[in-house]
Amino acid sequence: MIVKKRENKRLRAAMIFLGVILGLVCCEFILQISSFLMQGTISADSFKDKSSIKIICMGDSFTFGAGAMPEFSYPAQLQRILDNTISEKSFEVINLGYPDKNSALLAQELPQVIKDYNPDMVFVMIGVNDYCNFKGLGNIFNTHDFSKVDVLANLKIFKLFQIIRLNLKANFSPATKDNFRQKIFAYFKLIIEAAQQRYMNDLKKAEMLAKEAIEKFPSLGLGYVELARVYQEKIFFSQALDVFKKAAGMVISEEELPVFSGLIELSRNAEAAEEYDISIRALVLACCFSLDNEQVYAEFDHIFAITEDPRKAIIIYTALNEIFPEDEQIILRLGRMYKAMRDFEGAKKYWAVLLKNKNFQQEAEEEIASADFFIERGAAVVFNSAGEYGFSEFLNEISVFKRNNVKVDRNYILKNNRILLKNENKLVEKHLNPILAKKIESIANSCDNAGIKLFFVSYPLLVQTYVLAEVKRGNIAFIDLRPRFLEVLETGQWSDFFVHDGHCSALGYEIIGKAVADVIVKQFN
Image (tube, rainbow, N blue to C red; front, side):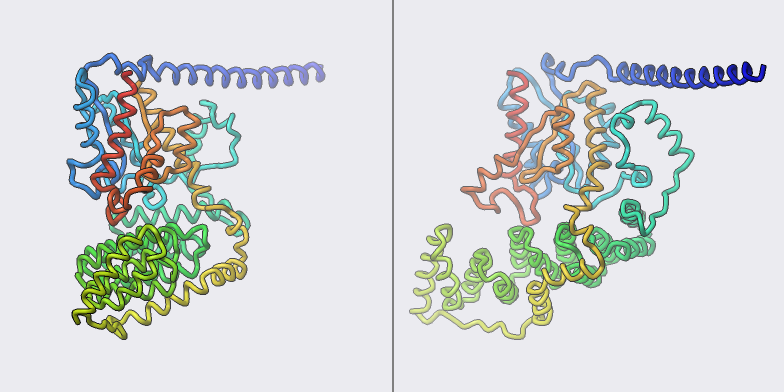
């Protein structure tokens, strides 16, 4: 009797277990079918039969058209190109680009945009702000788990339980000293919270959170950038520069890019406030990272054009020439600035160096001949820059930093046991990319569910790795602008296609407009 009761209990337990399994399978089946049905039956290519085509261009400042007049943004130029190319159809191109937009915000806004505009085609250029603007990410770091099995993560029932679990438990698990992954998540969470507090104008709390992030990981750059942004919101540009000077000796080489970009941002904000000395100092420090000196020099040119002060330009470029003695762009600018000061002997010294470079040879020969002409007629002066403007101490600090940069970097890592960080290739991107990839996937799903043809567009000279990975994984149409820009830059000047802050000029946006138009034309052939 007792044995029979035990067998009955086991049988009931087995039946209950089997019932639960069958229930979950049925639930998964229903959810998968519902998901399929919700995708709709509209073909993304149905627009080809229409006579009127509506096109939405979404993205950040590159779509908005920063650097050019509104009529020369790439969507505006695309409109004109299409009107002149395909006469049998009418096109409406709508520019929904907005400066500082990131992937998270775009993914969040796209469903409503589709509902409001009902477009036939959507072109998205996004990603450049993803590592400096965390708005729209919310508390995603609280819950993201990189250890999940992909098969499990793709199950609808698993996602349903995840939603339930997240609603029941929204608190972040505290990081421990022994858990590197949790610690890095805590770091990112602090950065995001600091940025959110800054957006809400609670600068005191934002400053506290940014400092806490720096203390947690002084070898990473984003904490310094966020703290510097807080100071810039307070109009404390000098304090922001001090933050970056500290970062220059602390941040490991793989994490220098956020600091470099932050210095460019600081320079522009200081320039807008007419604090030109701070702006110049930020650019000098940015040069020491040697990441994109062409961009830095363009920023210098812009400032010196505004201030109309070739004396200051000579002082700065001379100091940079000591740090980068073989940089021909600095030598070129020194020749031009000495000429502006009518110190033709000084100018000749630099033009003579450029005679060896075929790209500058003709200009150098003409300038030397011009300098000799004025020297022979006694029209030359001698420029002496010693002790002017109080830059000498700052420039000396930078020179010392540049000479000892590798040593400081390596010693700091060893001293603080950062070997793990050093071995991680682009640590920030590694942990952020899976999260940002989900935002790109969300953009694609929004268009796919609505039956809208989606195209991702690269930036002129770069494309984010997670964007490219999602494009390949989802077989999404992609327009790679990089080959076109690299081709024109072989024969043209950087300043022909880009303005001083790195955005496109009208001519640069024309290249983008033509590339997008070529793809649209192919859709109807």
